[in-house]
Length: 347
Image (cartoon, rainbow, N blue to C red; front, side, top):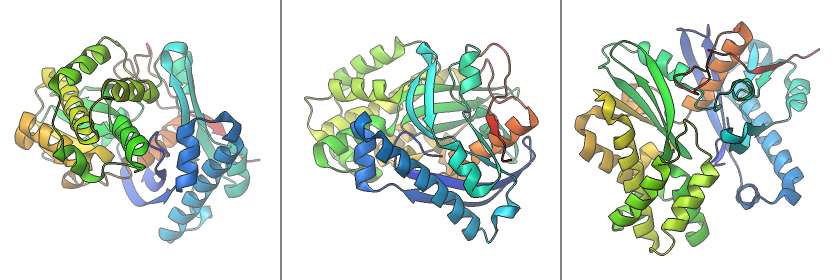
């Protein structure tokens, strides 16, 4: 799994039946170098071949390394699920592209490869995201003594949520911006990959007026899934005249305020933070002020917050192989439950 932040490729090995049994065995991350990150964020199509080579090589390296660090060999692996690198996600135009060279992976590992997890959902009228609520649902139900409604909030490039209500129904949808615009500001203004732990944001002053204006514009976009690039552009443009710390503080406030607005109807008893944003102290402080002791990190819940997404796509690969659905009206807005990963068989 390689997210839209383009930090690196996460690889996980799990054992699962595609339903309730999930055992996490090992996870690793292979980071992209500065040059590779610069090419990706520049969106320079003339350098696509260079970018594609980096994406494929990092995926192969991550798979090799996670197998080695788990003290296994490739014969112990039954199936490989690969999300690929999102280059475009425009569900309103029925278009989402996650790049990976499946043939290269087939030749290298000689295993069934499952990819293109969003394609069928979009073709059937869904928004192609979020895909992992079914996995979050299984993780939560595997933990004892939970309080419901229980929510998993993933603050990645975009922020999304999975809700398990008091009747054990689950829902999922995007909330709005996540780390995307924060990272973009740091990169463009400071040549930094991120505001580590939100330290710069903590030094800034929130501009409530600007945050409110951005929030209004986002709430007018009535869809379950957002294009990160569109959100990044909106947020960075609107905060363009603020100094860096104030811009970051304002966006951390915005992220927290959108979470409050979009989940308050559930009256959550437990909130579990996932993704890189769970480490941002400005965001976490804001959420603690809003929700109090209901907020905890993935690690406090007993799961690896850095590898949830890569574990999820291993799980979805198995569901695809078994023909089990993983997108629903309550998640992607598709009208009928669908499986959908494309299976590439090694012959």
